[in-house]
Length: 153
Image 1 (cartoon, rainbow, N blue to C red):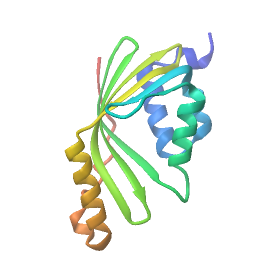
Image 2 (cartoon, helix red, strand yellow):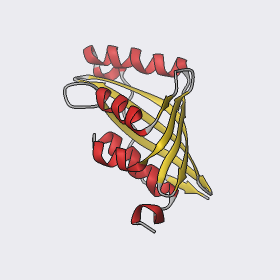
Image 3 (cartoon, one colour):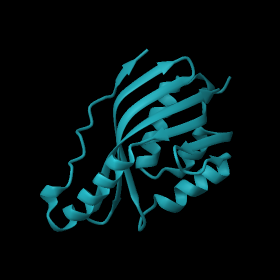
Image 4 (tube, one colour):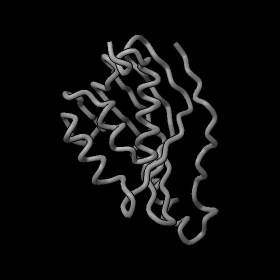
């Protein structure tokens, strides 16, 4: 059994989200199963490690969009991990922050399903506040502090 296969599902998801925030493409690819399915509810699904990694790499890299995340709650049930978090998409002084609910399924230390859901109103509000915040920073939401996520089993 490899070291990856012995990691808990919650550790795999936390490491994955941290890798997204630090633009660590090697870790992102290592934690995705070959047949991973990424579902961003109401948007087209992306299937396969190479396609998911490529989609993420084309978005979140220096000179393009930045990404950050704060996980507020994390719950596990077997191989399923649920996250309640705030995501941030940033470019220069622009930063949109919005709520996201995520469901991850982890098998043998790799993510096989990544399903995110968000409220379109909250997303649009986050982008509007981010745009206004470029001119008047007080208009933008602040990123929540980063305490350790509360894990529930």
